[in-house]
Image (cartoon, rainbow, N blue to C red; front, side):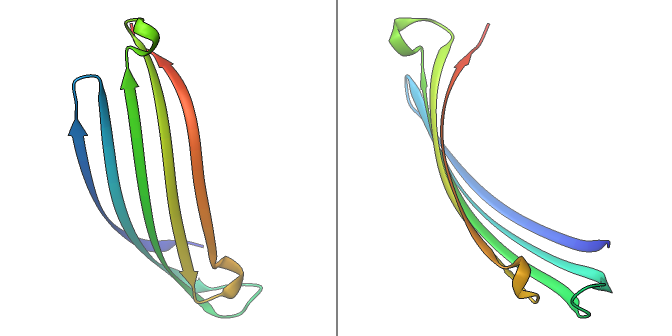
Length: 98
């Protein structure tokens, strides 16, 4: 099934001497073209999400090593209950830039 999808997102980035923080909010609307073959109704979804990340540069005093933390939440509301959900994201990572 195909859909028309519209998305709006706003992000704020704050840079510090050795780190950075981002906050973002997202809204998405999807309108599916056809009747769902199993549920026999048309589907429309509304989704919102929030995400925040923190990056610490030159961790452990080593140039190029970065530590990252992220946390996010999203909620999808659908005209078909099967596709309605909440999700939570928590992640941590290490990066190397050269």
